[in-house]
Image 1 (tube, rainbow, N blue to C red):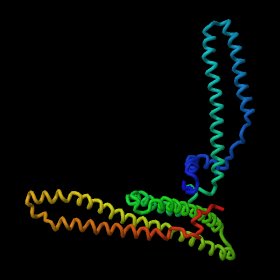
Image 2: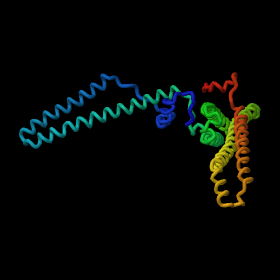
Image 3: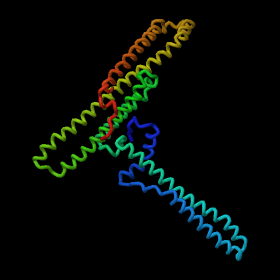
Length: 304
């Protein structure tokens, strides 16, 4: 499930937990109205009264049969009361949970997308976008704050949601369009259906462009990741430089000469510059994905 990032985290968690209720809703399920508290009280009073009546009857029987039956009654009757009452309470709790989930899901209708909402091409596109985003957010350069992790933490979820939302709408329209076309079209209707089909293709191309931009960003981040790893390894070697120099001096090993050691330091400097260029390039690639001040996408549009 992809959820609008503007939904509060606690509500988003509940939405993810409510998938079973959501599937029931989409099959036409509607919860029963809440039973009044007086109705629940009546049911419990009736249960308790029946138990007391049974107790009285068994008590009279115990006077004739013996103490053992009375002992059995004393142990068994409370158990029966607990079982009946617990089942009643459990049913009430389940119904109340599903009712609350139903209301929450209806409140956020149009602000979440399920895998079932996407046709196969749309699902593949969303998977590409999610893999690119995961590659960026899971990188060390992002964890170290070299990529502006705050911006990534806000913009990338917004991009994922916007792509999922558009793909869900595209999938729904594309499915309906195919169903209509499959019935056979008259020449007059074909003249209308053709530009509509092109509109669907153009919309898909626009979403593909978003996904490809994310993939380019992820590729640049991967390059920065390689430079970052190499830079850290070089820095580790530089930190032990004096140990190598001491070893060379003490052993007289001329094959490990000073020029090679100096070359190592120069490599570290070059890698640091390459790392900065990679990070700068990654930021430039990401810039087109940022919504402008007048871009309607910056407000995470809701489903009409």
